[in-house]
Image 1: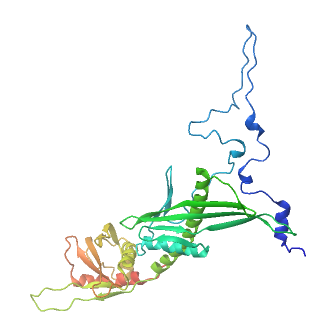
Image 2 (image 1 turned 60 degrees about the vertical axis):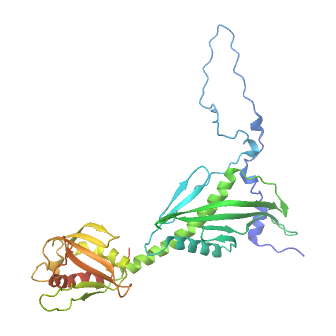
Length: 373
């Protein structure tokens, strides 16, 4: 009974077949490697030496070049380049290692957890099993990853298959501040077989680099997809408006200390902080400086934007022009809410009347949904 073969396999049987080893080598024989340089013409004494064209002279190789890599031993494949395609990544390459530097793209997401989560999903998607894992040290070693290629397909017998089996070590390192880290990959075991017979392959440094770069690029390509989705989701979240409530200070008797009125944003600290960077200039509040660690915006107030004029018919700015500070801090009762205090340049609270007067304009802009670019 004839073996059933799909049309694709029939085409492969006709057009193949070279092994991965063959594809490293130049076509034809390597007799050129044995060619010796011909001596120059012997010119009799008294005659002028002819001028020789040096355009096609082959320069001497440097001291770091392996002079044994000639003929069939020379790998003709073009080099692979590391492609840091994911947002917030770039290459860090030295003589003995290749690393992808990964920077945080969202302060609300722990970078270490993000990197491990992406690796877990990548392994699962490609059915790669884990042999060893130490999350504390950031090291993951894969089980054997096998790739098979049909070299020759026959309708009457078994296919001739070239198999490559490899194990890799992934190393995740995140710096103590948590804003950046790196991902490194190392090829730790390699086996090849053809038609069930083991191939005696001695990998060169360039071979190991090619395999490592290929795996690294595949991993970063997957990270690129995941990060692109995360960035789009973040932009969508940030485009939604934030409701802001006015919390008035309670009335107190004369001679008692008056508390300050403030604005309470229905969002976490980070999202409120980012939203204010957009809203404040639209209100005519120029951001002079800022300190996210202290939760401070240093602003100058003017009505150049025309915002207040459009809000009220009397065209009166509800706050004197000058320098002020906005103090941003997480609400003590609910971490999903953020308090916003308005203070003068001396860091003293402004009057509650001013806070309450500015509230309408602040609340309107903060609550607007924005278009996602």
